[in-house]
Length: 436
Ligand SMILES: *[C@@H]1O[C@H](CO)[C@@H](O)[C@H](O)[C@H]1NC(C)=O
Image: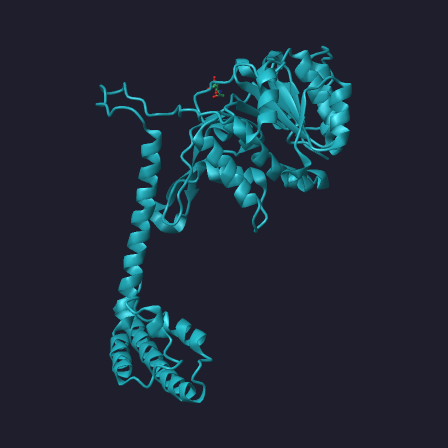
């Protein structure tokens, strides 16, 4: 906070700056008059326009082109003088204008939020019930399905989806070996509602040979060059765009990366009460479900402890979306940010959009979220650091295991299959907890 001395010197420097501005404008006008006489058709109108943008918004665009042929008019000159007089007060005025605009911006943001809410909160207003009995809205209404978005995909989904739900996995030939393990585990778990989005011909061939339901986008749908170039992160951006159509068609989607082994049918363990239901990168209850992390700054004395909220990120390689406006907005926001600089990791963007609240200059997403059970939807850190060493946890059968924490994905996936499906008790033993 600036003391009184600081404030005074700021004012002095501002008024000095102000008189410099006035001086510059007067010089400018004089030059303008000279050039207007020399070049009556106007060379400098653009320059003067930009200088004049500083002046009050009352003046119209035509007033501003003082450099061209208008100096002769004495009326105009006196108007300009008046404006210059105005300008000497304009420091304060400008500050007020900025303050006004900031207020208007905030009001607009607030209105925006209210308008959105009004769209979603339908139905009669109701009185709040008794203490302890009220529940806010978590389950947003689903969108009206729109088949015109993609009739070909609509036909495929009609055949494959069960209760308007399905697993969707994107794959190109770089990940074919993992896709093979993942798809065979899906089949072994008795799951029929899954679809591979084939990003190249190699995957189309694989799907045909192995009787795997697939969907290939039309090559003229624009974004497929990304799919073929195949870097992991480029494909990550693509998946948010592709999923949009599934939701628009009215289907719930369980997005699945290919480094995932299925051991049970996940649809038996989905709650369907939130826009987004996701597995966690957390490694214990606190990190997976959220906790109070205390930041300590001893120099603050009495107030040395600041409490913070922490939660390990949701895994953007395995999440369930209901077909709601909020879920679609999430996809749009993530895809949009990934398509612009600065380059960002899709999982970080996914989490930031999902969790950061509205604040001045930013309207946050209002989506409901649920963290999946971390032992049923298990990441590979939990499996290799904890579960395989614990005699009780070893008995538990997860729904999926996601080999997200380890680079040697394929051999670990095969070991997971051996351990849980083939009863090989020592299948997980050769692997270190982390990567070497
Ligand atoms: C972790 O959370 C689960 C589910 O809420 C609970 O059953 C379990 O007791 C918790 N474990 C610990 C160590 O707190």
